[in-house]
Structures are given as C-alpha cells and as structure tokens.
Length: 318
Image (tube, rainbow, N blue to C red; front, top):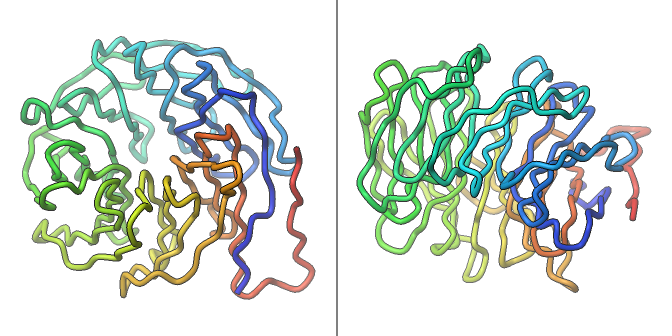
C-alpha cells in the first residue's frame, strides 16, 4: 500500500483555503480561499495555480457534470456565484441573504442546494434564483450538504443541533432525522454510491458516524482519538474507503467504510501546522486533495493499492 503526499501547492499567505472540488476529467482542482476572497484554479498535471478569481466571501464549491460551471457559496457575501471555468469569470449571481456553507449540485445540473443559516435553499441553475426553502429549527446551523445519487434526498449536517436531517427534494421537506448526541458538531458529509449510507465527520467528537438511510440511525462509528476534528469527508467511487480532513490532527485519514476502522493516515504537515478543512477525491480513486486552511496550501495525497508498474508520483511544487 502506498498512501503519501505526492504534491503540494502553496497559495498566498493568508489565503486560508476551505472548500475544494475537482473536475470529472481530473484536470483541475478548484479551491475557495476564505481568507483573501479568491477562488484558485489548480492544474493537476503541474500542481500549479493557473487562474485566480477575486470573489468576496468565497468559501465552498461544487462543479457541474460537464466541468463547464463552478458554483461558489460566498458565506459573508450571502450569495452564490456561477463561474465559467474556462475563463474563470462570474456569469451570474444568486442573492440568498443568509450566511452560506456547503453547496451541492444535482446530477442533471438543474438545481443547487446550499446550507444557509438554519435552512437548505434550492436554487434553479437556469435562472440563478431561489426556488424553495426547507427550514429547520432556529440555531441549528446548517453546515454540510450531500445529495443522494438517485436524486431523491439531500442530507444536511446541523452543526449546533448535533443532527443530520434527511430532506425530500421533490417537496423540500424534512422526512427523517438522525440525532447524534451532545457535542458532536457534525460538519462534512458523503454518501455511498448505492444510496444506502450517509457518513458524517464530527468536529468536536473527533470521529466519523455511519448512518443507515433506511432507518436514519447510527450503525457504526470510527473513533479517531482526541484532537482530530473531522471537518470534511469524501468517499471513493466504489464506496469502499472514506477519507477525512482531520483539522487539528493535520492529517488525511483513510477509513474502511464497511467496518468503520481506520486503515492508515498521511500527514499534511505539522510544522508549521496545516489544518486541512476541505477534501475531495478524483474519479479514478487515486488522488485525494485537501485544502489546508492554516498554512494556505493544497495537498495531493496519492493512494495506490498497490502502486501500478510505471506509476509516477508528482513531486512537491513550492
């Protein structure tokens, strides 16, 4: 097994990258830099920034299935921006008037779903207007959002309420709730390809919870130890492995999804601290990318099992 840092991109000091996503062609990684109000486009073949867009409040990102449009949830600006990836320019904007967190797009590129205050907002892509709202309890603080592959549900991590909500997309109503217990602070989410299981990273509880969609109950836990603070999580295309952005531990951790056991981890750097907060994986399940908030960098972690003959791992570009 080879799981190691294969490349690093340094961003400007104080960029504080947070949200991150990758295109389906595995050609570019995009990162929202919350500290300096920009979005960076990184070419994977060279691991270098090739374009930068100034965008106030940019924090979380998603990309459509054609890799044509990137969407940015701009937290403090309380807007969602539609960005043409080829030119890295904003083509339209939706005003939401609430602080925004994670954002997802459906498989048909028709609607966006964004965590906004204590709500989930549905935005029509064609008009970039808010179409409907699912409202949760006051002070729940919607944070993470993931959509089921079959397009039926959204799952929302309520940071302050220590819950994960199931929202039926056709009606934009809450149809299920999983209570995680006090002091979990659920954040990033991912879902299995077969629509059966949601996984949520917990900041304060320092672990990952496995939730059965059929019952909306916890069926497994991977405890990572004190001081790990899981801000974000992603899953491979087969639903076999999970990868975490473990903020306070300065590591990416790999978990076997079926048994919820920690398999291995790789450091993103601890001197100085890196504090990874966003994570994404490419479509061929080889490279994982983390947005490292504190030292303003993006790490490429190569996960080869085993390493194919002739594989070349990209080095660090500073």
